[in-house]
Image 1 (cartoon, helix red, strand yellow):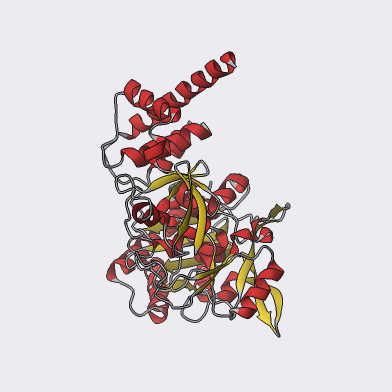
Image 2 (cartoon, rainbow over the protein chains, first blue to last red; image 1 turned 90 degrees about the horizontal axis):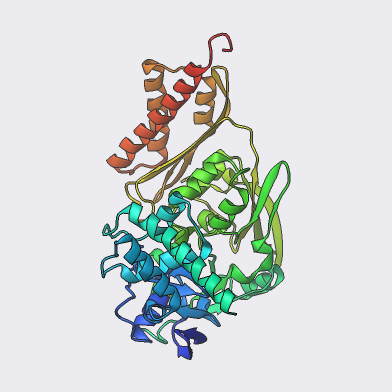
Length: 162
Length: 300
């Protein structure tokens, strides 16, 4: 099956099995071995990607569902301004995820910051998919709240200059 | 890696009449809703079936509809659990909300659909049990004489003798209707992880109207993921005959009756599941006892 999609800004036409999980597509077809894991459905939460700006577990997304969609992996997201906001939030709270879950947590933080979710329960529930115990729940809540503040300030500055 | 070996054909009907045409041409096709259950199976890829046909229901507009009046809420089968939570948290029954929240992260609830959670193959999620306790009904679409027919059925009517949800051949669930019941006792609890440890997990859903010291219209359903839903009107009737608070002797009788029924339905549930079922039953009875005892005696 031929599938047209955009992965990390590149428009690709991939020839692959229609039910192949996105996590495997990224590993086999685009050579992204660092940030994407394939846990065979154990829901480890380490394979998150952004599909049309929404965070998803790439092992749950079959190939036929990415037709015409825009997939962003952490590899390209790390160069974006949004990631800079998250890095600033890490720095200001003084807590960083471990290298194992850095990519996944950062993408989930991005989705929470983008949606402006500040409710501690909702934040922790969203992050509960990542089983890695490297971060304190209070720090996670602080990072999201700090990230929202930083993002808002940046947006205000941008609108003033525009 | 396995490219071209057994790539399933994907059909993406845009409406129900297109779906009917596709299912008539490919009667053995598998239906694909959110895909959370299918994709979470370790052997989901590569597909072992040769010439597999998949009908993806996500593009059928009718299945994404949601409507509500003052008596019930009606969800299309492709409405996600997250959408249900965000649209009806204030009005929907507590047991259903509790069940959705138990799933946890929105990364899962954003993809899992109400229809998909009912109609999983060879596996039972905690939702059919909750929907049975809530007296929910489902619209089943099926092919008869080469035409698509529909029928509203109670979820209990979809259960076979072994407690599994069974749909008619080439059938699908298109809508689910949940009534806004005024039952003041609603309880849902899941012990263990259905997805990661299905052999040992159990869920219970219980709803009833507690009026003074008796239960009106109680419904209780135990769910064992690899076996099915354990629901019986006889157990409901036992609950109706109780007067609360229930003391040890009555509780022992109730427990033995329930276990006799569970063991006759499911011969090989694990010892841990039995223990967990017992604990869940005690928790429900304790909650009901507490509720009854907190009502002032003059009101009882």
